[in-house]
Structures are given as structure tokens and as C-alpha cells.
Image (cartoon, rainbow, N blue to C red; front, side, top):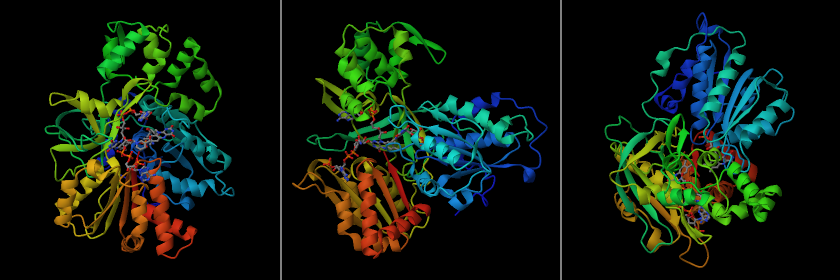
Length: 578
Ligand SMILES: Cc1cc2nc3c(=O)[nH]c(=O)nc-3n(C[C@H](O)[C@H](O)[C@H](O)COP(=O)(O)OP(=O)(O)OC[C@H]3O[C@@H](n4cnc5c(N)ncnc54)[C@H](O)[C@@H]3O)c2cc1C
Ligand SMILES: NC(=O)c1ccc[n+]([C@@H]2O[C@H](COP(=O)([O-])OP(=O)(O)OC[C@H]3O[C@@H](n4cnc5c(N)ncnc54)[C@H](OP(=O)(O)O)[C@@H]3O)[C@@H](O)[C@H]2O)c1
Ligand SMILES: Cc1cc2nc3c(=O)[nH]c(=O)nc-3n(C[C@H](O)[C@H](O)[C@H](O)COP(=O)(O)O)c2cc1C
């Protein structure tokens, strides 16, 4: 276990460099006057802890470390689960960069440290100087709650806030850059600073969030049956010529283009033509292009919602907004998108510029890669459920899932970039058991894991818990799974098709049925992976895991929780949930 005291000044490995994206490139314009970085041994150590589920906060942490080095500091970047509470409470200079997950919750890698620090009021952090950068998304009710919680907790325990917390929305780069530029000099507090070494920025990868690569979509095939109540598709995107590679467990982010019909319906609804020239990130472009490629137009931003409420005078919307009752607002909004809200008050008009000012930037969507980079070095496979539903007398479509299914074709260059996931990995030890729980599209990374184990000729037991609605229509990758069973790559398979019988059967029911064997494999050092729905499935699977350990290991609830925590610390219980 790494601690703050034994992993000083860790070098940037390839994955960490990859996280830097194009972000740091903008930062070398901050020219800092100095005599030099000085004696590294005497440099002040600052700890930069990140709580991150999909790597954004981690990437910002490494950006902060670059600038800290340039200021003559000794940055120690750690995931929050790499530091014990006993070491945490001794820290003197601390930057916390954390995202928020679930419904206002900590990311997985921050939970244990948070539990320890938030449950002990006797902790005294008088020696600590800190600042918090919170990453989040204003479309969630509890915006940046994890960062807010850390900020308030540290203050309550006596730590000195050196710089006000900054809460970042999805387009966090500028705010994060400003926070880094402001906090690092305060952490240095007179320590020698140097001119940022531009050679450091030259290692930045070619592609990233700000500079996605253009991948050719070479395969788009229906996985679920045409009779299924859902549409799950298999995609392959070529990375030939990009110089890029990936690992099983990584995610690919896809930058979508909005549906052309939705764009033109919105333009008509607000009384524009679409030809208006509008500036977007310093470039002048037609309104239609701006809406197609640069802005989120499906789900309304809070600003747009408030403006529509004001202009339309819609009583229900105004009541939902002013009540402060988030459930009321959520239930009003459920199934309604921006166009529905505009169509409710057809007299409401906006100029193109007014409308753009109320929108959020169009975000990429993450997808767990369903292929092994070793078995498929030239392509990235994705397993995606197309979001389609009918409400308010209109067909509604998810932006990115249907961009890939309906719009992209073999001529389309899909804008993408990778998100490495350092902890969601096939165990290095080929003999250790791997238990994978992945219903629905949650199967994606486990297809990759199984390919990886086959490629390595690994002998450890592989056990998959999979399920979906109906076996006859939703048993995706069935041929591959059965072939892997035959060749013994897949040692054990437990299926839970929820709608094939009156009573719902879920993967966690199968886990309970197989409790004894599951516990035996955990006792042998087995890894336990979960992927798929975060809100219901992952919570219930977590509960089932605790129950199995408690029952089979004859442990109290507390002992089972301790057992699970140790698995998390050992990175043997890891999740990729969304
Ligand atoms: C790390 C990570 C990995 C992921 N991996 C995968 C994966 O492997 N496969 C996969 O399919 N997805 C995956 N996802 C989810 C994926 O990123 C997208 O969220 C998903 O594809 C939906 O995006 P979209 O743009 O199509 O829909 P959006 O345009 O984002 O619309 C989704 C929204 O539509 C609304 N909505 C959806 N259904 C209904 C309904 N029935 N009634 C009313 N409103 C509704 C909800 O507000 C919902 O939030 C992953 C997410 C993360 C964070
Ligand atoms: N919170 C959400 O809004 C939410 C939830 C799920 C999925 N999604 C999104 O929907 C898309 C497709 O999801 P998906 O294809 O992965 O399938 P899914 O909708 O997650 O369903 C897969 C299987 O999981 C079952 N399931 C439902 N509740 C469960 C629970 N508490 N425990 C265990 N299993 C449970 C489903 O059964 P039944 O449907 O028969 O109950 C189904 O058999 C993804 O983009 C995902 O992000 C969103
Ligand atoms: C499933 C899920 C739940 C989220 N919940 C919240 C939330 O409750 N509040 C919030 O502000 N942001 C929320 N976010 C947004 C993330 O915090 C945001 O995308 C952040 O940039 C992720 O950073 P990371 O990659 O370091 O984890 C959520 C994102 C996902 C995918």
C-alpha cells in the first residue's frame, strides 16, 4: 500500500501522460520567473489527492503536479485510496481534486478515506493548508457535492483554506486551469519558481479531450434481436494510423453530433433560420452548425429552463422550479427535452445568440471498451444500448447512442479519445480467479477481459454473471460466450434473465445462490468486478456481496464490511458503473 510518506514525487507514466490531454498545452503561457527548481530534497512536499471515477480529476491532478514542480515544489499525486487516514491527517499542504458520483456521492476511490475522515470529530487538522477543486455537472441536483463535503469537512477539522473551492461544470478545463494557477503559488508561498519547462508539454499526447482523433466506424451491427424491447448494437472503430493503443478496461469517449431533425425543429421553434453567423470558441459559424456540433440541445440547462419558465409563464414549470423540491422538478422534466419545452409555448422566440448563451457545451459520452487492445490492436469495440423512447407525442433519442446507430456510417470519422482506467484491469497474476458481474451493456469490459485472458493463455478461473430482460432476444454475444465456455476460457457462467418469468431474477440472486463457491474464490484472492447501471444494479450487487461474505464466512455485518473494504484497498473489488 502506497502512502503519502513513501511515494514521493512519482514520475508520470504513460497512462498519466495520456490524461494530460491537450490541457497542459495551454498552461505554458504562464511564464513564471525564477532562479530554478532548487534542491529537490529541500522542496516543500504538497500532496495532490484525487477522487476520480473516469479520470478527469486524475488528469487535473497531474496538471497541477506539473505546475507545482515548476514552482520548486515536490508534488505527490495519489489516488484517495492510496493514502491511509493516519497519514492523511498529518499532511501539511494538500490539494484535493474530486468529482462527484451517484447522487451527490464520492467517487469509489474516495469513499473509504471520506468515511474515515468524516466519522471522527476528534481529528485536528490545524497544521493543514488546503484547497479543493470540485468536478461535477450542473445537470445533477447535488452539483459538486463531494468537493463541497471535503471542503467543509477540512475546514471544520481546523485546516486552513488557502484558496476558495472552485466548482467546475462539465467543461472544466478553464476553471481547473485557473484554480491550479492560483493555488500552486500559494502552496509554494515564496518557494523558488522557475520558467515552466516547455519540453514537459511536448510529451503531451497527440489526441485527447480537446483534440479527439477521427476514427472510422468500420462495424455497426445489431446484437439484440429485432424483436427485443431494446436495441443493443456492436460497433468497431478503426484506430489504424493513429498511433494509439488501449488496454482492456479502458473507456472510449465519443463526441457526438446532434440529430439534424432535432436541430432544425429547435431552430424553427425559436423563430430562427439557422443561417445566422455566430461565434463559437472564436470561430464564426452558421447557427445550424453550432447547434449540431457544439451544444447540448437535448437536455435543457438550468439557465435555459429558468429563461423558458420566465418567458413562457408556464405555471407548472414555474411551480416546479420555485418549489425547491427537486423530485417535483425531476418528475416535471422526466421525458421532456428542450424541444418539448419550446413547443409548449410556441409564441416564445429567441435570437440565435440569446439561445446559444443559454446552452451547455455538447459533451462526449464514455463507453466501456468491449475488446482487448492486444487481441484487436487496430479496432476498438463498443457495446451500446440505443436510447429511444416516446414521450409527449414525440420520438426521443439519446444524443450519442443514436448518433452512432443512425447517423454515423463507414464514411463518418467519429471524434473519439481514450480514458484509461488504471484500476479496472485484468489481474497481472494469470492464475487468480476473476468474477465479473455485468448485466446489460455491463458485459462490455468483460468481453474485453475474457479476450485478454485468452490472449495471455491465463489459467485463472473466469466467472461471468450476465443477464438482461429476455434470453430469446437479449442474450448478446451468445455465440462468443458459448465458444469461450467450450474452450474453457469462461469457466463459469450464471445467467439472470429478468423478464422470462413472473418473478424478476437478477444477477445478485445468482450470486446468492452460488454464495459458497463465490466466497471460496474470493478467499483464493479472486478479483470481483462490476459493470453497468450504477443506480440500482451496482448497489444491490454490493449488498449481495456483503451478504455472501457475511453468510459464507460466518462474519458479522461489520466484519463483512471490513473484508469488502480490504478488497477495495487491494483493488480486488473494482467497479465501472454509470
Ligand atoms: C464510464 C462509463 C462507461 C459507459 N459505458 C457504456 C457502455 O458500454 N454501453 C452503453 O450503452 N452505455 C455506456 N455508458 C453510458 C453512456 O455514456 C451514455 O450515457 C448513454 O449512451 C446515453 O447517452 P446518449 O447520448 O445516447 O443519451 P442522452 O442524450 O445523454 O440522453 C440520456 C437521457 O435521456 C433521458 N432518458 C433516457 N431514457 C428515458 C426514458 N425511457 N424516458 C424518459 N427519459 C429518458 C434521461 O434523462 C437520460 O439521462 C457509460 C457511461 C460511463 C460514464
Ligand atoms: N438510472 C438510469 O437512468 C439507468 C438505469 C439503467 C440503465 N441506464 C442506462 O440505460 C442504458 C442501457 O442499460 P443496459 O442495457 O445496461 O441495461 P439495464 O437497463 O441496466 O438492464 C439490464 C438488466 O438489469 C436488470 N436490472 C434492473 N434493475 C436491476 C437491479 N436492481 N439489480 C440487478 N439487475 C437489475 C434489468 O431488468 P429489468 O429491466 O427487467 O428490471 C435487465 O435485466 C445505459 O446507457 C445505461 O446508462 C440508465
Ligand atoms: C453516473 C454519474 C453520476 C454523476 N453524479 C454527479 C452528481 O451527483 N453531481 C455532480 O455534480 N456531478 C455528477 N456527475 C458528473 C461527474 O462528477 C463529472 O462528469 C466529472 O467530470 C467526472 O470526473 P472524474 O472523471 O474525475 O470522475 C456524475 C457523472 C456520472 C457518469
